[in-house]
Image 1 (spheres, rainbow, N blue to C red):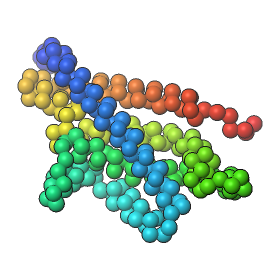
Image 2: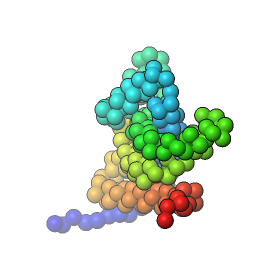
Image 3: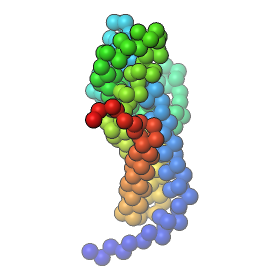
Image 4: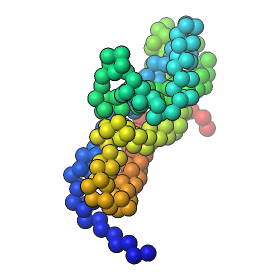
Length: 224
């Protein structure tokens, strides 16, 4: 093989790579935050809400979990303008990622909530706590502690799946790579660098999640 590696044109475009990396971090971080909020609300509604609310949440979960993320992304960016809802590529990508994560994380959070012993909830009722206070102080934190590994794995998968948003020209890392490839024709070098950047992002997110666990969720559970 007589291929000559030329990383110079790739490294010369470091401002674009840095911008794409930052946009991927920003998009993924916001989707994780909003998706977790959606998941907590839906898990609460599915475990404590009235039957119509539980049924509506279940329809949402089944719809999202049984359709491709790419189709969901196209729906928000290409289909909604037909009914007058137009979003920028960035906004459509953020909404699609939030909705997608919310459905998957809802089932994870629900499993954690249902794992909380009934006696703890009854103790909260005996202390005259409201249902919101019981959910916040008695149920949510122990549940998050139990499901944290599964939840953070889902967050990492979301960050990696964010590369799909380049198909609607959202300004993420993969989109930048496609632009550089069309300008330099150094596909091999570009995607080696992009692969290493995604690997670095995954390791950084994993480190941050471990620090969050050690800071907020690591405490004695009272078991010998």
